[in-house]
Length: 571
Image (cartoon, rainbow, N blue to C red; front, side, top):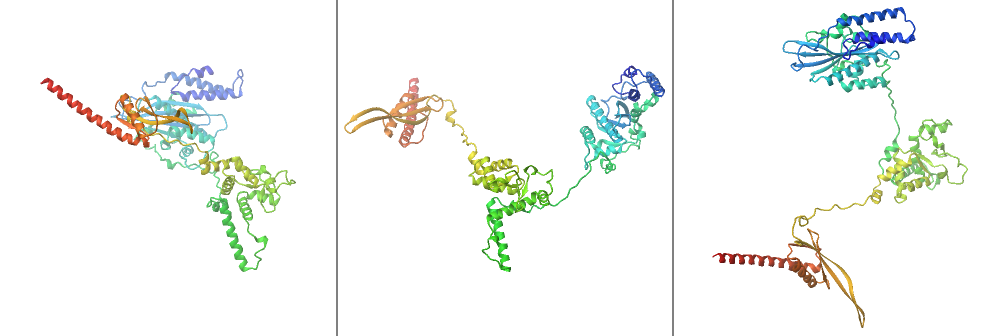
């Protein structure tokens, strides 16, 4: 049997409906029989029919060209792919449709069949596998054909699959979702169309055929591809809704949860950037309410039980905060029930104190330490209250690091869930901390002046500065000792960075003028001088500018004089 099946070499799928019949039969035989067991006579009869079908393939004739005309001369080239599935196999077949100057031509391109999984798959799943096979077949053909296609159309006889492909409102389970994603990777919902089962040529590939006559339906393109036929109708995507989405097990059940959460304190505290300011505002509101009540009823204004203190206001805010964020835990502890296992604070073994505040439990109940240290108050990190508290105690420790801020919170009897991340976030956004811990900024240097970049002889453009003093000799006098100091004038070429140094006895204008004269006498005239505008240099720079201009005038007069002499000599 294996040799008979493997003797069929058909990479393009011309006789795929015949070979799939043998594959189905081979799987049925291999299920309940060992290698040397005799097979059932009914299966043996089917096997003989398959062998006879294979023998008739020698009379099958397939044209060498897909269509009678050349694809290079065709006007409109279309690719049409049909898919189908059955309980035993899935298949897909592709045809070309071209229009020449005379008439339309259609031809077989490629076909492919696969065995369906033996169990665990419904018909919509198998039809979806057939659609995946059709897109893979189209991808192979488009890559292989060196022609431009006008359109690519896909056809299936399953409206359930068309509903899956055109769905935009519901979610599927993984099996359908992954295959729909693969289909939409190579195609769009507008390319998919419905075709009836009797007109679907891919139906032969899923059932199998046993004669050459039946194989013609597979090899010849259906007549509905012609324009003259009205049997094929392209239906728009919106006309393929999901079929019975409430009963379809492949579609996820829609669960909608509605509820109203009381977050008054969070909304109110969002308007404050400082914990003290929030406490003071609530304190004033409570005092106004107390005064209003005292007007209507006679109460002792000095009664300690009715005094509004910042501590009482803080406890009130924390109590409201816990009622908004931990209502189930508080209710469970009040009624004596266990805390829900999904609670975020179950590991803290929370307890309720006399004021109704949630505190961290533990084994320090008999300790002599304050209750704020043994059983701190639990605060949620998802509330603006927690950020205000972190910012308040961070400012209290003078903007020190995370560990100091966290320690200050613990010392004041507060346990914020996920405090490490919250404190790091607050410190990252803290402006004083960013300034204190930020990197040192450096000024960007300006462009170099043109005198530093233009090629010129040495000391054409010069920079000047002075350095010193240093002691060169010490003389003893009647009054003590006298020191002789010296300074130096540094001349540096702006282009070549050459250096010339002149020693001066004092930082005066006359000493600087003499040093500059010695420099010009050795190095020649200077085009431009740059200095830090010291008081002993400003007068000299004015003198040097006039001196240079005088040199230029003298040089021009000398040139004119020599030119006149040359002309006289020629005459």
